Image (cartoon, rainbow, N blue to C red; front, side, top):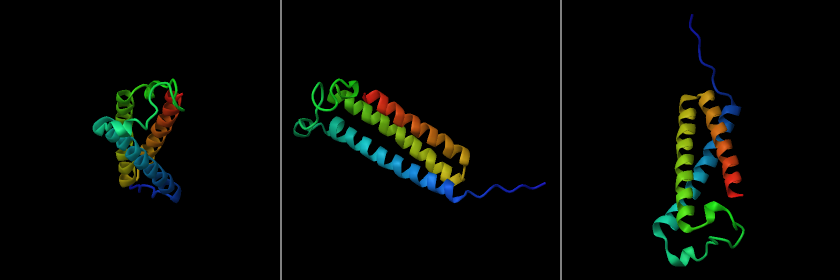
Length: 118
């Protein structure tokens, strides 16, 4: 008996597109932040960031210093890039299960990021 795989619907492709765009943007922003703050570390640029106890990030441990902020941005950027690659593989393989896994991990990362910034 031969069974054929289901062809993904427009809902699959819409969820895939939204997830890929979100993860690509998130990866780009976070890795750029790591590059600017951690790699280049220009004192003139770092002076514009409110590290420590000033500004809207007062008391948040991720913003305690430039080093911690750069490390956090790099790790989160690499994690979102990994999720982006998984989401691209889900589209390539047309795998609903892999796409659902990526969506759960991306939602968890958002919740974790919000909780850790507070």
